Image 1 (cartoon, one colour):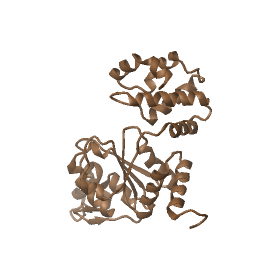
Image 2 (cartoon, helix red, strand yellow; image 1 turned 45 degrees about the horizontal axis):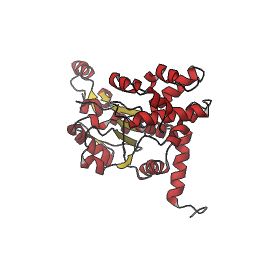
Image 3 (cartoon, rainbow, N blue to C red; image 1 turned 90 degrees about the horizontal axis):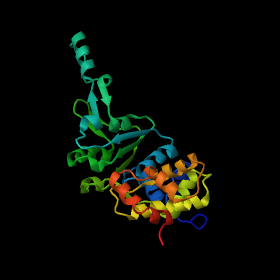
Image 4 (tube, rainbow, N blue to C red; image 1 turned 180 degrees about the horizontal axis):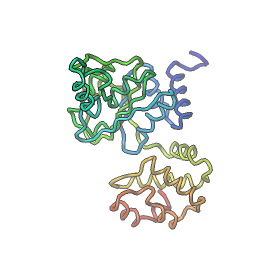
Length: 288
């Protein structure tokens, strides 16, 4: 051991620091898992509630490694043409009209989509497959070859493999179970909402001039909102919006009037808003 620390402790500290420099405040176990995903060249599956910072971790990895970020936003009904590749049919037709000897499946007619873009990047991209749980099981099956071997099979060519393997991050809000086959191919981390002190640290990083008392009051209020049965509990992005709104308003005192006037920063559903307004005093006071 070097300096009394084990190899995993050194790797953990290295990635805590790298992610912090990229603007992401990570707990040790999450930073270690991210570092191991890079060291082992394995995809990383991040699960957790919406707004807990999963997507931003992928963005921070791109900044920390100096690689471009390629994002695939999943949705119901997404298919291979949206994720893997497509062909420029118009250009193929025009080329064939000019010469019957031309290969219509030449690379110049290819339209790379996010997975192939990541494979073709000469420096190795960071591929973010965001909210993979929104896609269906058939789409998961399309991902398996890529996740296992970092390659895509193109019937007209063969296999497309990268010069530098992409860093691949998948996120899921757990709206449906993911297949065992997908999970086996990935390292895994659960990203929960941050504890109060870590959330305060994040706010200090992004709004450093915010008074300490206001920071702690805001964090307590957000924690209170998350403990209530809201349709859309506030995530980290909402916490930061509230802090930035406070800055835009010259950091007014924490009060019922201020909270009521700025609830739209953190409450994004009409029924939730009614629930919160009826308990505004409790929200301002925080937990007993």
